Image (cartoon, rainbow, N blue to C red):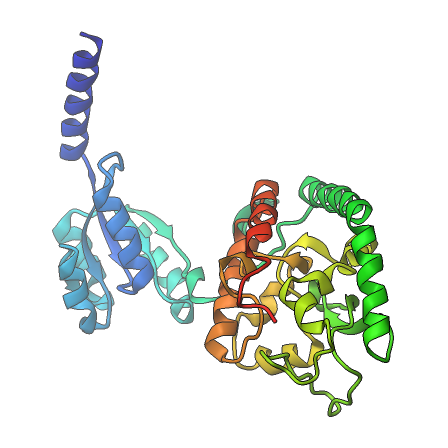
Length: 346
């Protein structure tokens, strides 16, 4: 009986709501306007109903007809359209380059006694952990912001220090053996140190067990390791393939220069190369670099010998930053154990 009552009143409410939905107009026929319109008309709980779109570009007509929303005219006809369609609410979803028209449109529409809502097309720019806030009554849209502030930063730091300390205790015998083998099988230091970009683009010095023979690089150039690389030492291939060479970075974590999980730090020369080819590339530095990351557990580990491979790695890095949580860090750490012996690393 209870379920029947709930069903009856829900149907009655929805029928009444649909009959009373507010005639709504979208100004701006781009992707943002279409996204808003589709969401409104699909959601039966929303009190608005989009009756049409207005834009000076008539080439948008076919794509809007695909979602069942007619093109009603150009911006110069806005007053006539509002009156003719009985419009009571307008969403202004113009492109960022056309934001100058918002004030003019808003003034005109207020005189027609309709509700006016501005939806700035922030999706036309690269977003990172975006949010909306308010200060002194002024709405603020954060386009790019690190998720590690306040309690979030403290929680991630506690996880890093705690797990890194435990890992060093248990892995120290292995690290001592590897250090000795590196020293015995080739000339040179046990550790390889390299400048890389860390949080906020600051340079940090990361540590690795040396896996290559001593060699000279051209100034400002860093050559990535490849399969069957003749620069690898006797045990270099093995410690790279199993990521044992990365274990000294646990000290980087304790120093605070790195995190257990985050975008992998790239050599400074690689950053300079890719920042001009992938527009979102430098956004990956809005969080601490990590020993492992979302990209690595999804198959993008090892050499990035094409722009597409690096683009995919960057996409995962940005997805990690946008969705960061302690639980995601723990999930990635657990998954890392299963990809250590992947063929993608060498």
